[in-house]
Length: 290
Image (cartoon, rainbow, N blue to C red; front, side, top):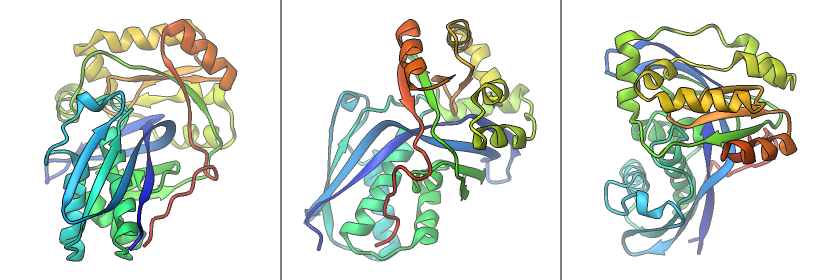
């Protein structure tokens, strides 16, 4: 057995998130672009007799290290799928803010699947891992790849896309928004946004000015109407020179698009945000097989 495996768990932002309607199973059909970014957690797995989790890092106090943590739930789901009986000592380095719309828990789950698939030599391929990932959470399948991805259905239908690197500034909030609340608010008074084809083509072409004008998130109006801080963060980014701004996922983090890395750094200083870059299609490869 491999002695130690470490996998990155990058956060994500959504340049667009389109909600198509509620499904019979209670979830919502969506269409979204998921961009992994350079803000990341990390998961390390080493052999052990049982499953144990330790959480460290600047956001460690914000998450539970108990059985309700997605890392341990993911390990249990992989065990159930494969019949694996061995354990692992898992170390989660936590930097991504919790319940911020940045996919931190889902990224941790995806990294755990990749790490344990390698550590236990399960030999599951991408499609099999996606099946397990879909049982854990809607964002987990797309985050398995650590590449820009289009996600549809409730998030389980994933297609990777080739996109150049882009630079963003994140403005986080001192409060959390649950995805359940965000979707419930959309169902009460939300609408479905435009076809995202033009936005995707602008990103592919590296046209950040045009991209900035096309960013949208169908969940944003419902969250912002109840948390005006989201609207204020968006306005602050635009006033300070962002090419566009949009709430990420179910919020409340707002991401502002920058011209390049130096622009992102300057913008981050002005708005007291965090400058990040998206992970380009060829920059970070991860193993999704045993």
